[in-house]
Structure formats: C-alpha cells, structure tokens
Image (cartoon, rainbow, N blue to C red; front, side, top):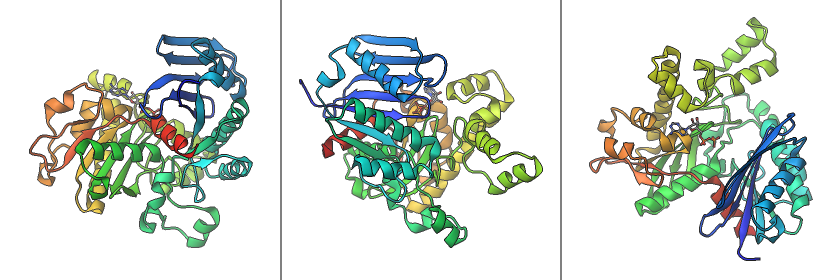
Length: 396
Ligand code: ADP
C-alpha cells in the first residue's frame, strides 16, 4: 500500500465510468469508461499514465463491466486490491428527501436507495447495481454514496414547490430536487477560491453545460434555485432532453397524437433538445452544421442560448444582483460562442466579457470578464470525480 486512493464509480444503465483519484492532489491515476453493457459487443477505454488502453469484449452485465475495469487496472499496474484504495465513492443521482449528506452504504442504505429508484428509475437503479457489484469486489473498504441532489436540499420551499394539488404532491413526493449538485457545489467553491473571496459573501450563478445542462443560483454558498426539477428533464435545452416544456404538450401528444407514455418519455429524454431540433446532440457537431449554414442547427443554437439567457435573467433577479457567473461542463468550458452570446448586451447590468480572455484555450479556472465588468465572469473546469473522492475520504 503506497498512498491513499479513492475509487470513484458512476454507474449508468449501460455504462460505468470509473476513476482512481488521489483525493489530496486531485490527480487521476487512471480513468476509464465501460460502455455498451448488455449489448453483443461491449467496450472499455482506460486512460492512465502509460497511455490509453482500449478493447472490445462481451459485457453481459454490470458485474462483467466492473470485472473488466478491475482487469485493465491490474494490467496497467498493481491490482485493485494493492492500489491503496481506502474508500469507494459512488455517484448516486437521486437522494430523494432522505439523503443529503454523503452516506456510508450498508444493507439498510442500499434498501432505501432501491426504494428511491421509483423516483428516478433511469438513474438510481443502475447506481444501486454499481454499488452492489463494487461492494462485492472491494468488501473491506467503506463505500460512500454521494448524491447529485444533495446540494439542492437547501432550496427554499418557494423554489422547490410545484403549484399542483398539495396532497397529490405530498403523496407522490413531487417537488423540485435539482441535479448536478456535486458539480455546482464544487465549481462555486472553486470560483470563490479563484476570486480569493469567501463563498459566504458571494451571489453566484453557475451554468453547468454538458450533455445534460443545468443552472443554479447560489447565495452565501447555499443553492437557492436550480433549473432541474423532480427529474433531470426540466430546465435548459440539453443534448437530447427538451428541458422546460408546457406540460399541456404532453397531454396533447397523448390525447391527440396517440402517443403512449413510454413514447413521450423517449421523445422528451432521448429525441429532443439539440438532437430533436437539428439531428445532432453533440455540441461540436451542432456548431459544424451551423458553420455550414444549416438552418435547423442555427435554430437549435438560438433556442439553446435563449433558454440559457432566460435562466440567467431569472437568477439575477432572485439573487438581487450577482457577483460571479461561472461556466462549466464540456460546452461551458470550451465554447466561446455560447459564453459570449448568453451574456451579450448585458453591459447595463454590469456584465462585460473580454473577447480575448473568452477566446483563450486555457483549461484552468480563469476570468473571462473585462477589468471594467462589475460582475466576474469565470470559466471553471468541473471535476465531479474529485469532489466525490474528497467527500468519500472524509467519511472513511
Ligand atoms: P457530460 O454531461 O456527459 O459529462 P460533458 O460535460 O463532457 O458531458 O460535455 C459534453 C458536451 O460538451 C458535448 O456536447 C460536446 O460536444 C461539448 N464539447 C466538448 N468540447 C467542446 C468544444 N471544444 N466546443 C464545443 N463543445 C464542446
């Protein structure tokens, strides 16, 4: 045993992301993706100091997936059990109203997590399976569940409540929970560090723009609003998810277009957003189409930016002004256009982007606002794995 390492696992329905993280330095010793679990040909990609290892193999289930991860780790260095792993951190999407703090998983917690899967079947069930399998592989270290909803449990009732029949909402646990919390918390903390300010004194807007996308309003280090709701479907336009939509559209599709509930689910979660509007969900592909003059892609981009601006405006008012706006996630960290267009014309509100800073390709936390901007505009790379690793080690 050489050093204290945390294994971080993010188990999805047909994929498992895993990372060996040094929680103090933040170094990722190895980082992998197992995908196409349950399909005829599965795949594993593992990046480590010595390079990249890629292979295709049959992965009938998550047990096979984690065993494949264990095998590549052993091939590229000492086996998993000799890596000095002191804890396993698991990303769990939905903590419901029960779990706010990182929690050591025992049999009772696992049972409760299974129960919560009814709230988020797409996400929590694969998370639970991942935890079960990992506990068998590494039975001697604590397994810690870190919840995507946790950071948002401070939402004021007015922000968390849907205006529907209160009894129906209570019985069915319907409220706004918010997601991507680990990222919003980590990035807002890093933004405060970067500014050399105490988070307790800051009003922040964080825009996490990846395949999934969400915005949050944070006052004094506590979230007061966020764009995702009971599920990760609400809010911003995403790669394949619609974000906000008039609920009447769903009723209409069911009654008038004869669509079944599973078809509407599929439409809103997998065939909407950028993909629904222009056929591409990867932002880079959308931008290529825009550059080629494709009108559908142009509209998709415009809808994306319009929605983003609507949330920025809402949060500016909710916070009563803002000290820092921070972009993160694959799109937020890399795309110059979205950052510029979503904050364009807001000089009157004290928001001024510096074009040269915005165009810098640096991959570290940085300021992109001009020196005259009253509001700090930042780009801060997110690192959910590191945040999970630190929470896990704190409990081990
Ligand atoms: P996830 O939500 O799965 O963690 P990421 O945060 O990695 O995803 O974000 C993925 C998105 O970021 C994709 O739509 C991808 O096209 C986009 N992206 C990555 N690099 C760039 C770039 N250089 N320019 C524009 N978009 C980018």
